[in-house]
Length: 142
Image 1: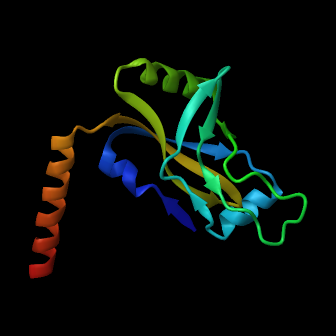
Image 2: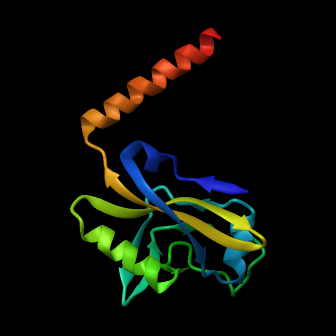
C-alpha cells in the first residue's frame, strides 16, 4: 500500500529525499492501511526543532466510535536532530520547501518520504508536459 503525491513531481524539482516515521493514533493507522489518505496539498513545517506534517487528510475509520481521530490535524514526524537541522538550512534558501512525496507502510510502521523541493516556474511545467507527451508517443509507437 503506497499513496503518492503526483502533483509534487509536476509542481517542484525534488532536490533530496528523506524517510521519516509518522506518529499516528490507533484509528489513523487503520485508515492508512485501508488507503484512505490524501497528501496532495500537505507540507512540512518545523516548530521548536520538531517536524510536523500539515494538511494531510486521513479519513475517519468506519468502526472507530468515540475514539475516532480528527481527519486533518497536525501530525509529528520522527526525524533525527541532524536531519531536522538539514531541513531547516534548506528551507532558509529562497524558493525551497519541504513536501511529502509518498506515504507507505514498512514493517508495520507508517513512513513518509519527504522531499526538499524547489518550485517550478510556468515554463518549466510546460516543458514537463511536452516531455511527457513525447515520451507517451514514443511508447505508443513501439
